[in-house]
Length: 314
Image (tube, rainbow, N blue to C red; front, top):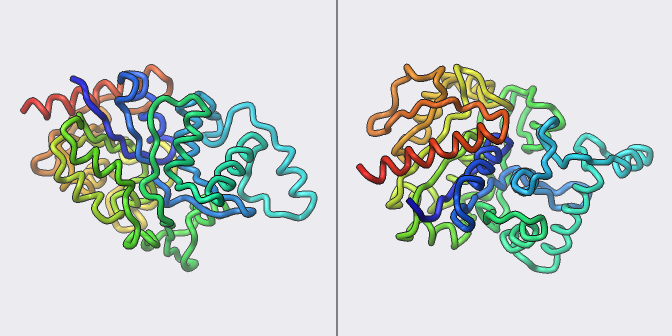
């Protein structure tokens, strides 16, 4: 089956599945919508961590040992900044710094974030299109036991240690989705919508919080398939299950499925969660969902597409 596949992604898990999809789909068939709730201004630079993770991963430049940034990175800038007494809690490698400088320059010149991102992915040789969830400013904030925190303060500076009590996607209510995304969701050529195995609260729900986005996905004619970021009650990476427990939710694949239940046709879980009950009307698909190499990512991408195609044929 052919057609456009629209993937919602954020973080390392989302980028891994996006890479698998890019490898098994034909050129031009994959469009990725990246979370920008993590974006922030630091040292005068516009930084888009989730978009950058997608760019580096699909360009074959990601540092998989660290799980962020570029491979073969150097750190002369950070060392010099530290000697001058500047803030070093958010580490920017020398090559990574060039990308942030170029993004900041182009945004200051009046380009939209979607135009800048498209230009960067072309320069890096990424074939699949990568779009931000919006060109407007949206920032994820978390109410914790120590008060309200900006996302990067919680995630990087405090290393996800504070207990999360609530989340707010500041600016989302006034933001507009990128028009191309809404057009794709309403189009005849859409093969599937894939919700990647990203943190629901920090990566996917900021996308769904953009007015019109959730409704457009729910009403699209193509099947919607999500992959659980939780395996046997544990997150593969990051604070997903810690946050779920702190928010009074079960740390389980089932709880993730319930957050997307109004959108889903199928939900892919690891074999370890094969006994879970899927929400009504959602088909459960089991697979080995841990992606430790490119072969795993390709295999899971094929399973996700097969699940979508099976739903389309029903």
